[in-house]
Image (cartoon, rainbow, N blue to C red; front, side):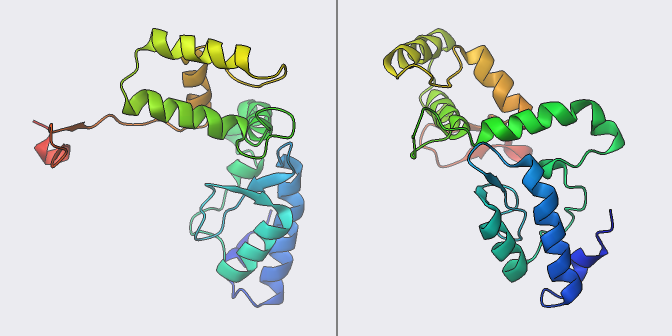
Length: 182
């Protein structure tokens, strides 16, 4: 697929036609809410938007530099062919509603917020598992929550959303990282 148009002027016909072709291509990997990740310079594949909004962002701001293999939009390289189906399922799950008509959280955003709370307040794994079990029981049937910390870690790893734990002093005035790690 020719992507030379990405570096052309945003007002050129080649660029606009290229964006339209990208939107058509990326529409195959939209999530259940009909949204895709926005690869514009300011959003950099961090948030989901409607196809029209992504198209507008790309025309006004342009693609972020270096995004030439559209792996976050369903394009498979030779190394990724085995994982292509898994990726498209992940993309659908990412924007899936937490439960029917839930407008506040997607499945992924809710899981990430829970995981963030677990990390911030140093909850033990068993405590976190019990909280997940309680939430699954409390929500309406059909809620799409994992049932354990193990499942949460698998989801986070599948999206390459790993984290690095960095120690800080008791007063949070210094991070023990890189040259100061000791």
